[in-house]
Length: 175
Image (cartoon, rainbow, N blue to C red; front, side):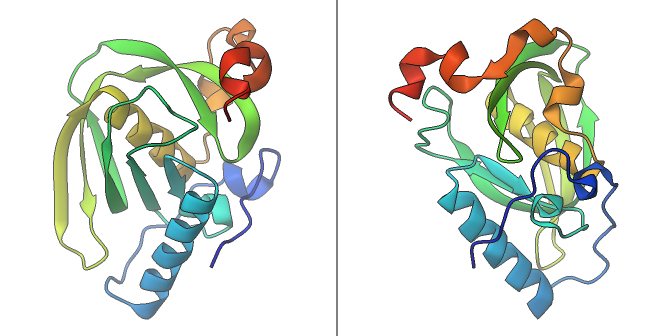
């Protein structure tokens, strides 16, 4: 089922989400089904449970061909529960980000370039991956939602934050 996506300004997006304590449940599978449907309907690269009003530490992400992100490398579809991120470098890179909870806007956001993420899949099996590039950016963006952080809070120069069609008029025609 496609769910409503909360928008910036909704206090529920600013709260820290709770750990998932039980895996392989009908409730968890139903949540993941709704998150998948909602992310795909919105052409998102990822979605966190708090974005649909569920305060649990659950994120999904994955990109193949996506009109909102035409120039990025593929990221395998992943369902990640109770994630923990560990930077593998101090190096940061700024990159343009958007968010389904901040529609129509983009901002230049600094992120760690290489990290390890750990967590569980819906059955409770461990996931451990070392990633870089856009994959690392997407994971950090989605996991920020679990701690009540939206990407505009990370922007260092607000001159690099604005409406997508103004910042990228050539893309807006194709979106």
